[in-house]
Image (tube, rainbow, N blue to C red):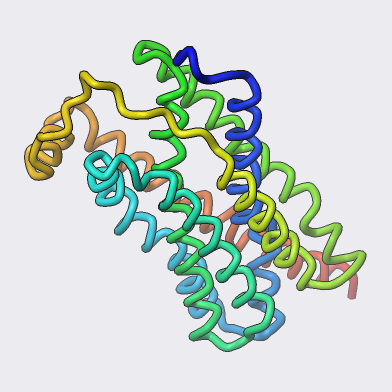
Length: 246
């Protein structure tokens, strides 16, 4: 770990990460129910739910390669992720048309794509041989906001209104933006190679043994996750509850 990185820097960065994911997932557990009561068809709901992954697939890898070169812009892109999250949340709060909600979810995917900057920046807080520890910590801070949103989103809707989880997302994005502005960036190490061509990096990435099968497994499991738990499972459970209540 860099001698310039203190415990307070870790706490600040991890707090921003917590806000990053809570702002993205605060409304996700009830989102399909919200779309159902607008009302949208299941086909339209599926398009909106799937749009979140489209921008991630299109942006994460290119952004990672780009910011490997433009190292001084990493923090700027991380901050931009919170700005986009605020815009996305406000669109979802005030709009009920298919086009605007689709745009809002596409922008939420843009925010999630900026996650690659957080992983790169936080890994720099550790010595090269301890990057696994950094990724483990970040993964924990990724799952905890999801778990918290699953515990609270339905309760917030029941006590208040469907709009509240979206406002929670906007509020946490604003807090995260303030924290991200204060995040410390570790200067690039002198021994880092920054003159490699992007195409050579792409070829080197795809040449990693076993990477492609793992990538497709990850894509499949994320698809199942958003189709079921964060997708149509709440709709099905609600429908069954209504049937039993009759």
